Amino acid sequence: MKKEEILSTMLTLIARQGLHATPMSQLAKEAHVAAGTIYHYFSSKEALIHELYLSIYNEFRQVATSDQVDERNYAIEFSAMCLRLFKYMIQNPEKFYFFQQYEHTPIEKEIGAADDHSCIADRFIHLGLISNQLKSMPVELISGLVYNNLAPWRDCNCSKNNFKQRHDPDGD
Image (cartoon, rainbow, N blue to C red; front, side, top):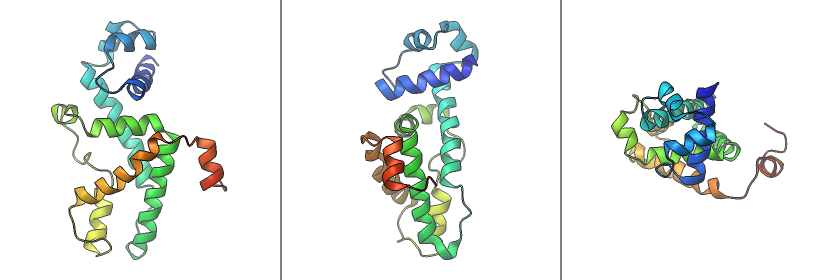
């Protein structure tokens, strides 16, 4: 219970202040735990941030790859993946903001990211390249184009309810 509260509070603080402007002392105060309690669960601030990243990454990956990819309908599936990511981002702006920050920080390189954590949709994009559904260019460039075009929406004033009313009236 305390560990989840620490992670949740860290996510909120990072979304409000930024990754590097969130001291552990403030985290302890706002999570209503002693600093020692934080270090009982996490060996360092970087370890805490990395665990938060892994949690969000796994959730994000499930959203991005929730349907089976049918190579014959690649364009439709690619659009569906982007829509799922967009919905996730609108429904979880703090998580998306954190994810974007983490992906562009040296912490990931210091901790050592897990095998395929550089881009959630790399395999999906690679399939599009192999099947000639996507223009031949580096996977990193394509994934950057997808995610960086979604990122500005993070800051829009669209609430979860407004999004559902305007873009998903059936609630799917």
